[in-house]
Structure formats: C-alpha cells, structure tokens
Length: 202
Image (cartoon, rainbow, N blue to C red):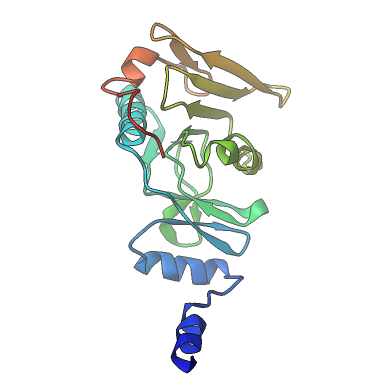
C-alpha cells in the first residue's frame, strides 16, 4: 500500500503553472502541449489529412507571398495571446512585416494577421468557439480560416473596417477561396489535393 501511495504521489500534477514553467517543460517535452491560463493541455496527434491540408495551405501562401513583406509559419511556431494568457500552436500563421516575439524567444510570435486551423473531431468546437475568441484579442488579427477534413468545406471569418467579423463559406471542389487580408485566391481543389475523405479523423 505504501508503494502504491508513493507512485500516486509521484504522478500528482500541479494544477497551475506559470508561463515560464510551461516554456521550460515544453522545451524538454517529446510532444506538443498548449498553455491556457496556467493549465498545460496535451495536444492530440494530427491525421495525415490534417498534415496535407495544413501543408497545402502553407505552400500556396508561401509561394504567393514569396517576394512580399509577409512571413508564413506552420505548426511548430507558438503564438502567445497575452489577454488570455495562452500559448498555442496554430496550424498556419501569416504575419505582415516583422514578427513581434514574446520576450527574447524567437520561437514564439504575437502578431499574426491571418490564422488557419484544420478542424479535428476533438478540437473543432474549441477552434470555432473559445479559441476564435482568444485570437480576436490580437490587434493585428484580421482573418481566420477553418478547414474541414471530411469534405470540401472552408469557413472564412474576415474582419471589416467596422470591426465586424463576416463569415463566408466555401463548399465545393470548384470554389475559390478569396483571402481578404492578403489578396490571394486559391481553389479548394488545390487546397484539398491528395486528401482522402474516407480517412478516419481524430
């Protein structure tokens, strides 16, 4: 019984971590974790469709913006959201001009213009709800793209000059996604290249 208690004590996890503690742990972690107002949240593994969609979107943006004053990031770059004390890993981010970093850490940015998330079964409600709320607190943020894995379906939220977020939905292979914040167009056929809709999503 004493051995059992000791093991349980060892497995006990802190309820609250500071941002500095999270960053130190994340640097040594084998898997990605998000940080939400003191809590460390393990991220689920991505499917091959998730990877293809994020990669396709990243490649299209990177090629189109190659000679322009934008930076495009995928997957491994963290975003810090100060109002909500959150570190997260957006699937794709676009920054206009130079990135503004969190402290001196060049792996964490704070000023995306556009964010794209590929929806997963386990995270889609969060991506469409609280996470979008958190993203909207970023002054530079003007466009949010949500990409479905199971069908040709993209939701685009674009911020207009009256600070209203307008929704446009794209639902066919022939549809053309017109990004408003960076004046780029790409077809859903191009975005969904090699995606297998029969694949089980996470």
